[in-house]
Length: 425
Ligand code: AMP
Ligand code: GLY
Image (tube, rainbow, N blue to C red; front, side, top):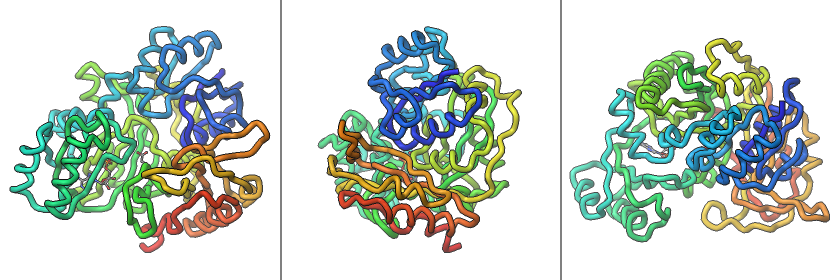
């Protein structure tokens, strides 16, 4: 079958790379794709949110499965458009994507269904929001309600910073319309992990967990980003924690979404805080994490195509169990100078072929473009994802940074300490 991967980042390149290895897949097409995906198959210049064009294309090409990468495509209703034309789709409907698209919806849903998460309140009024903080203890957690690319969260240590964050979101509209409302919630102490489950509306299959580094600079300093690197497995995510996460978070969510008429199909990504009382939900995402997905794809041994198709068709209960490489995998994000605030695009990148020669390394494209003469340039904030597997996490990290050093890109930067938390255990 032909598979259409929707999106243009490193997550989509990794999914395409894995799907291309399937004997069931004749072609991996991507829309709009990127130069890495272009090495795997055709790219078509249709934007991920252009649901009508994508549905028409999928029908015309007799695509056997569409895989939705980014939340924006799901929130725009791509799965709904595909369902109307009868093309199987791995990804949630617009109504199910609310779990990520609105933090207020997600929080209310969790309280309706007993999913453990931090206490919270929603505000559209800055004065009330600030008054509410008066009775609370720092640190204060302040979030834009809508989609903000992982950047719409402020953890403020002081009242002054918290008040400033409220003003920035509600008045100055730092995150645009995503900041029409804010959510203020209790701070959860603990260590974070990202966990993923494939869902078909009724059945969920656990994948493995990963940890990412959200801050821009070494030592987990600097502004929040979409993620500067990731590794899997996550040492805090023991089998017991996985079972608790399935029982207390994933399965009640799947049942609740079905009961509320929004059955969830696709990958449910639980951003978790592993607290002394067990895992608590920080946020849901309705798609694979980026860059967590890249590490997962490096560890998955089973064929990805049949299990995504089974999820799309509501047939996960009969799917074969997934096999994983026990070896750890790591992803180092190579970002453009200035990311996350104002990434400088257009700089020339050389040396990728040389970097890919390092054993056990794959370099995925995240935000690149190719000139007609073959020059590769930075075209986004997060630009390359250097991934490696190794016998130990230390080996994997060593290989990834070996490859990073072979990339010749003065316009880029990366953290030098991806995986440090796991290494220091
Ligand atoms: P989110 O976009 O909701 O995942 O939040 C981004 C980051 O902010 C998370 O990865 C956490 O590091 C942090 N964070 C969000 N909510 C909380 C919370 N209630 N307690 C502690 N840290 C949080
Ligand atoms: N790396 C976190 C995310 O994809 O939201």
